[in-house]
Length: 241
Image (cartoon, rainbow, N blue to C red; front, side, top):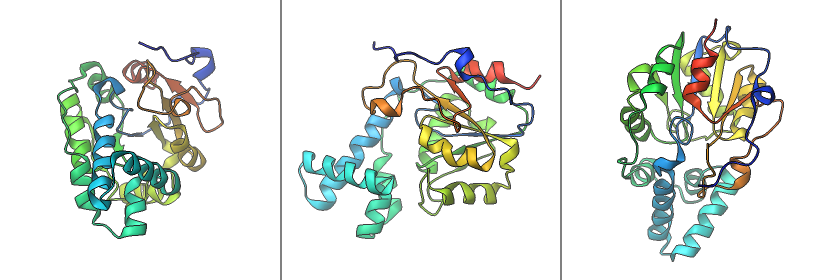
């Protein structure tokens, strides 16, 4: 297995702010609450390609190229399809998330660590509520979360666009200055940090062959206060007091 090059060290990652002020813990879903070895996202990615192939009557390579175009221009393939084709977003989400969850297993250390966090816990995802619920149940952590805020709740505006976070904060009445955000994509931490959240970048322990290298590399930036390759251990060590 390929190891991540130059993983962050304790000295590199720990800021001085700490988490004693945090009363709301916000987690991204895919590749944040579970490792890429579960192979869920590659299935979703493939389903999106298949959706495009069927919708436009394209071959696989052309569908993949179009998918990359939509992702690059709009942030998600779904938003591109809504903007340019006016598709029914629910039909797309239902199709994209018809995947096999058998590679995902309960994670008792993660559940224990999340359960011990003081205050509220919420999931904020660009995916669907059904997908988030399925993942959380398989991991054995669903009961620890107050709610899921999905792409439909954001009006189908994806992270990292500011309105996605603003709608989340308004709906759940979250004070960003007393919140922590956990994400696997550094770009999705820019707005949370600007709003006053404590930010944590969750990196894979081993290189994910299904993602771009720059999307899973350690990064030093003002909007990334902490980095970790072990979410459960990080949470256990970061408890206030």
